[in-house]
Length: 153
Image (cartoon, rainbow, N blue to C red; front, top):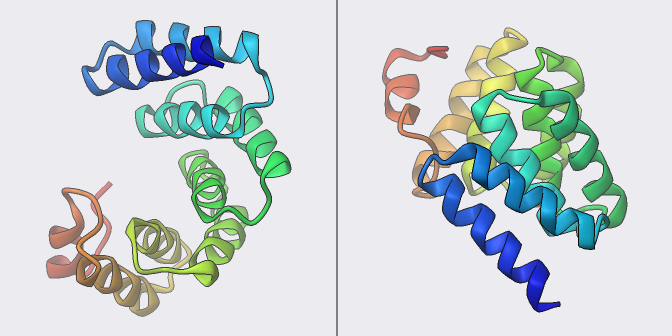
């Protein structure tokens, strides 16, 4: 439906311009039309997790996107990352491990490394950070994590 695409695109644009209230409203408007749109649920949840805001809402949306589209590595990663942001590291590790098993040569490897570090599995964490770097993926902090062999929250 064209209107859903419009609201979703608007949400993406506002988010990239850091106009978060407008972004959230646009995503909410899209979900009013199609509350079971897995892609919108996932993207909205991920943006909330990056901002560390409304994490309960993000967890609910992400869980639903995984119910609608199981074994989608991006959706698994989002759910794991939300759990990580909530400090639920053991649960996060389960979800991120599933995402990595599907294919880890991406930024997902960095997320998995972060949770492994929090679980005091530092050597494994470094391995996954290096994997993310080799893939040309990862956050702006990835090089620092690798160089210092530690997570800099």
